[in-house]
Structure formats: C-alpha cells, structure tokens
Amino acid sequence: MNPLRFILSIALVCSLFSCVSDDFNNMAEGFVPPSPRDAAIMAVDQYDPDIRRRGVTLLANSPFGGAPDYLAMYRDYVASDRDPLVRASAIKALGRFGDVEDAVLIAPWLNRSTTDSTQVRRAAAVALQRLHNQEVVAFLLRSLRDIDEDAQVRASVATALGQYPENQVFVGLIAALQAGSLSINLSAAESLHMLTGQVFGTDWDALFEWGAKIVEEDRNLFAYQMAYQYPTYQHEERWWDRITFWEHRIHEMPDFPVGLKEESRRTTYDETDE
Image 1 (cartoon, rainbow, N blue to C red):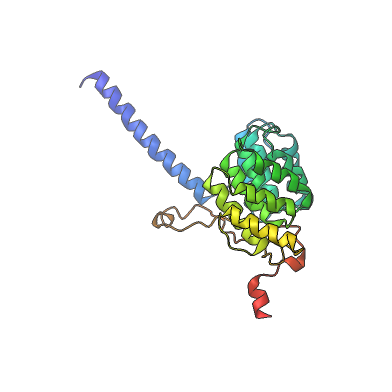
Image 2: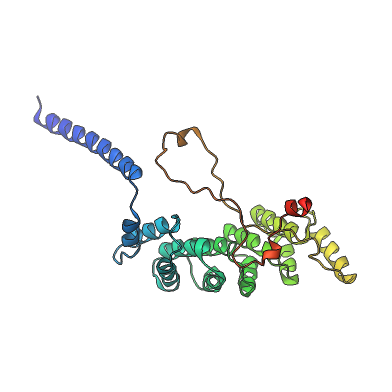
C-alpha cells in the first residue's frame, strides 16, 4: 500500500472519530450543565470575557440569579466591564432581576455616544421594557428620535415607552409612526394603542388629529390607557426540540414591569370580572 495513502487514511479515520467524540462531548455538556458554583466561577473569570459572559448568562437564566452578590456583580459589569458582550449580558440580567434604580444605571447605554455596540443598546432597550422609572423617559425618547440608530433598538424603545402616559411620549410615538422602518412603526402603534386605548394603527395623521381634539376639549389623552406588560419571546416548539431535549429553555410570560404601581396592574379581564 502506498505509504502516503496509508498516512492520509489514518488521519481521516482519526479526524472522523475526533468529530464524533466532539459531538458526544458537546451533547454530554448539555446533559450535565454547569453547576451553580461553576457558573459563578465562570462569571468572575477576569482573563476570558467569553467565559465571563457565559457565566453571567447562566446565572441570569437561573432561578437564583437575583441573589444580592450576583446583582452587585451585574451592576459592576454594566458600569465598568470593557467587553461589550459581557456588559450586554449583565444588562439583560438586571432586566430580569433588577429594581427601579437599575433603570437609571442602564438608560445611558441607549446612546450611541456612550457605546458603539449595537448589542449593548439592544439589551438596554429590552431591559427598560421590564424596569419602570420615569427618569429614563428622556433617554428613551432620544434613542427613538435617532434616525441613525439600529431599527431593532428603536422598535424595542418604542415598546418600552408604552408604559409612560406622558404628552411628550405621545408626540414622540406619533413621530415614530413616520419612521422608515415597519418594525418601528408597528411597535409605536402598539404602544399608542396601550396608552390611549384607541385603534388607529399606523395612521399617524388620524391619531394626531384625535389627540389635538382631546387636548382642545381639555380631556385626558390617557383616559382609556390599558395595562402595560412587557413582551417576552415565546418559543414555538418544533419536532427537533424532542431530539435536542437536553437544551434548557426558559418559558416566560408577559408581566408588569418592576416599579409600576399596583393599581395599574389590573387587566381588562379583572375589570370585567368585577
């Protein structure tokens, strides 16, 4: 047998077995996910930002991720970590476990002048859908008006504004109906519907005229405001999910943002029952 061909055959076999071995190792990691201790150690790894990001993500997706020590770590990473993906993960974690003051910490990261990372700005926009604090409205409106901002960021910001019944928010969302992105238009329309109870879709002209009439008659623009709940990603199960059953997925339901008054947490169903 040709020696060169023999060497190549051995290399090919080893490569195939190596691939199979790697596949089984990856599957094994899925069957035996990192322990809470492993996740915590990964989250404080100061040498590899990717390991640090994975650790933060594992903690944020766990039921114990809101422990005081972890919250302090997330806040520190938002303020000072140099890696944008670690910062984005920490922002997401605060969006899930943080309080109203964390909204103030997160809001500046919506600005392109603060960070050029789209991932960080997207994470900030989504987190502010879950944390209610009127001090962040100006940051949200500034981001929404930024025509050079990523459309997904602006759409997420428009959704977050649906929890603030303020005249400046009403005007800002009407302006967003005229943006050159359908995703921004639809998010702004949904928030305007939540704030006013009116159904004008993306017809900004009709909504503006309605608002002008309400103001002229000295009535409340938000008299029919609906209860705001932040949206969540709903995973639609597919046949391959049964094969990759070892993958862990969090199934969240829409809920009220931290910081909203209790009396605003009544759905239309509750009112109907009463």
